Length: 230
Image (cartoon, rainbow, N blue to C red; front, side, top):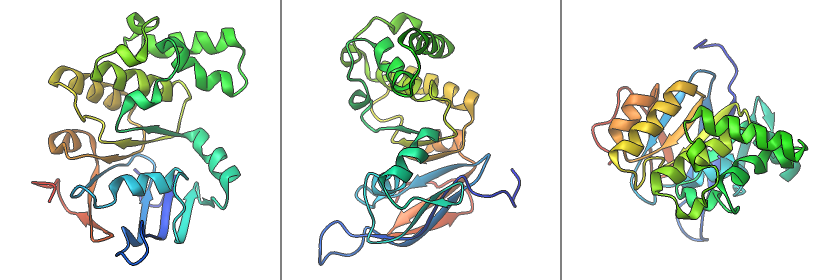
């Protein structure tokens, strides 16, 4: 990674408070994700890790601070809508990303809504599923898959969009060892710049290039992989 390369994504002085009178969940927080980086973010439950990702994706508006993609500040929903074309967000509960009748339709949904023809979107979806060795799931209903299958199907619906970076919120949550290994293999193969929120420390050590702890609203860089999440 070029240390002088411009960030793909940046939070600048972000403050967010969930309820008036409470301490900020995020307090004047800054973070930059550069090309080639995969940043693991650890912290206690309720420390604001998911809030950080939600703000980055434009799902929550902070009281103060800036959100930038490729050094362009997102000032409104139109700006975020454009930025999200290059962002893949894997939710903690992958079943929330699978809402069509079949997995093939779920994966084709994004390309179709970008203006590709139905036939072209389906071809792209089949190719994405094949690339992740998921072709056998094409005609299955996403809500009836195992947790690992849902996670990988949701990831296929992201990667088909040829995104530039990933936000991963507890990606190994509720996965068995086999599904976890499959997910790791896919992420290692694509090696997209990523922010990864997780309590799964071995997973983070195997994937991430640097680590931060979120505590009391602020991020602290960790010189080495953490030994625990607390």
